Amino acid sequence: MKQCPHPNSASRAPWVGIDWGTSNIRAYRMAADNSLIDSCSKKIHISDCAQAGFESILNELLAPWQLPAHTPTLMCGMAGSKMGWVEAPYVNCPATVDALLQQSVAVPHHPHISIIPGLSYVDEDGGFDVMRGEEVQLLGLFDSKHFSSGTICAPGTHTKWVYAKDKIIERFRTTMTGELFSVLSEHSILRQSLDAETESAEAGAGFERGLETVSSSDHLLADLFKVRTDALFGVAPEQSGADYLSGLLIGHDVKQSVSQQQAGNAVIPIIGPPAMSARYQRALRHFGFQSEILDANHITLAGLISAREQQVAGVKDQ
Image 1: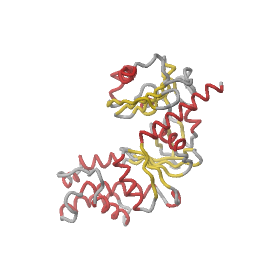
Image 2: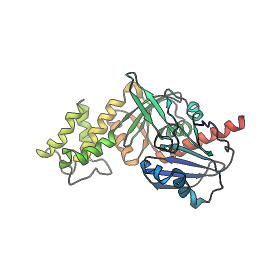
Image 3: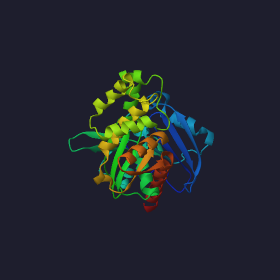
């Protein structure tokens, strides 16, 4: 496997940034001055990409732009996973931005395409954790928001809690909050209490009730069954079960992941889908923490730009 800290084709020229997610690919067409010209996306699960062919998928996605051959292309996300185009091995934390970019990997036979690796962390008990894609958002956060130290929240199917100091990514942990909500609401006995509803786009009174429950409880598994019993005995208002479940899960996540010592009086950046980010902000506020919601696409693009700038600078220094 060839490591590619600075692609051979890197120069002050138009380029493409790719955020290759688990189920969606987003491409950014960039000018030489790093201004955004256009963007596009394609829905395809990473598990289907090998059969379809990564090169074919990329060519089809970029075809409308009629780009010159060998246009510099910088990727992040699942393209570098074991299921991806070529594996970009994880960089273990604590990790600096430089260490992350130095381990970028070139796609075989395509030296103009490079993939930024993900991050891994081994906790004090020897447990492993990983991320792919969010690390580029961290680059964007450090560069565009002048953030250097503190707690960072990246909500999603698998929420990431990241702890950074002086732009060094010291550690992180993953919580399966979003996926657990889906599993419980679709495949557990709790589904019977949620049949006539879905989680509202904007958190309602049920969400706040879930946060109140968490305030006086450390027992998530017992609290979850209250979604069922509250419905059985008519304790909960109608159409609030899904929001109550959401409040329980996000509330416990926040309560267990952030401490006053970690956060202090700092503002916690939230980088994720708008609706879920709003729920995390509400939960953080409930437990006394300040936060700011940032646009995930904007921060991802800022991270790709930051990485590209360092690639170009590296070539000039050679």
